[in-house]
Length: 460
Image 1: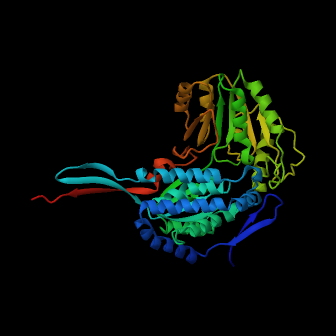
Image 2: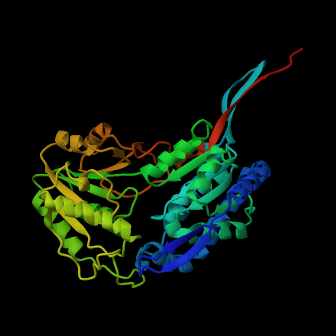
Image 3: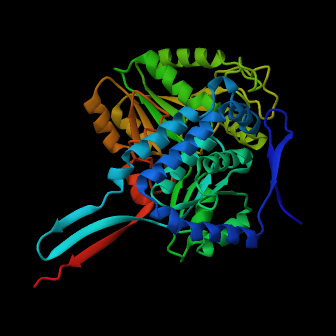
C-alpha cells in the first residue's frame, strides 16, 4: 500500500493537503534523470543559468497572493506578515549578483612554461531537504546557488509544508529551468536514506532537527557524499548596561515570539544586565500581553497557532516543568489558548540552566530571562549550550561587542539586531547546530568542488 504524507492544518486539525510518496524505484529514477540532465545544464553559460533562476524567483513572487494563505493553512503564520518573498528574493538576488566572482577561476600564476589555476566545479546532483518553519526562504538558500553553480537539484520538503516545493518547481519550470534539472519529490524517510546511501546524490543539504541531521550523516557514512546541516538552536540575547533598552526589548521579544517562536535563529534565552533587568522585564511583559492569538487567516491576528499540536505540547511541558521547579510565568493564559496548537506566548524569570526551557530547544513562543552582572557571566551562560547558531549582543560599543562575540561559541554574532539572515555572510553553526555554510561566497564553495589545472606548455 502506498504511503501518504498528510499536512494537518494547525488552524483546525483538518487534513489540508496530502501526497503519495515515490516508490524506491521511482525515487532512484528521478535522481537518475537529474544526473542525466546536469551536464547540459552546467554547460550553459553562467549568465543564462542566473537569468533562468531569477525568472523562477520572480514567478514564485507572482504566486504570493496564493502562497500567503497556504502558509497560514499549513504552518500557522498569520497572513498579516505577507509571506516570505522579500527574504526569498533578497537571498536569491544576492547569490545571483556574486555568482561570477564567487565561481571565477583562481589564477595561481602563468609564465612561459606553465599555466596554473583552480576551477569551481559543480558537485552534480544536490539534494535539498528543507524545513517547514520558513519553507521558501530556507529552500532558496541552497536551491538558487546550487542551480546557478551548475548543479541539478532534487528538493524534498517537510510534510507540514507539502505545497512549498511544488510551488517552487512549478514556478521554476514555467520560467524555463528544465524539469529534470530541478525536481520536487515526496519521499519516505527510508527511501531518503536509501538514496543517500546509494550515492544518488553528490551533496546533501539538510535543515531540521539534530536527530534528522544524524540520520542524514548515518545514511551518507562511507559514501564520501558531503553533508551540510543546520540543526537545532538555543540562541541567546545579551543586553549590556549601555544598551538602547527599548530597541533591545522590542527586537529580542519579537525575535523570541515571531512565527510563534518557530524560527531557526529565534531568541530562546535572554541575559540582561542587573541595572536594566526590571525595566526590560516590565516592557517585555507589556509587549507579549498585547499580542492577539488567533486564526492566522484573520488579518488582526499577530500570533498564530504552532504548526503542530505536538510542538505546542513540548513547549507546554518545558514551561510546566520550569514553573514546578521555581520559575515565574508572567503571562496569564490567553482565552484563545485551546490546549492544542494555539499556545499562550510566555515569559519566564527565576529560571536556571538546570531547566529544560533554558537548555533544550523550545522552538515555540517562550523565552527565559536571567539577570547577569558582567560580560564574563553572560559569556559563560551563553556558551552553556549544546547549540551554536546565533547570538545577539546589545551595546553602544562596537569594539566591546566584537570582544564579547569573539568569546561566544556561535555561528553568527549580531549587534543591536537579531533573527536576520544576511546573504552576504555565511550562514553557519557549530556544536549540535551542525556544520557547513550557506549563502555568501562560502555557500558557492560548499556547492562546488575545487579542480586544479597544472598545464605545461610545449616550448620549442
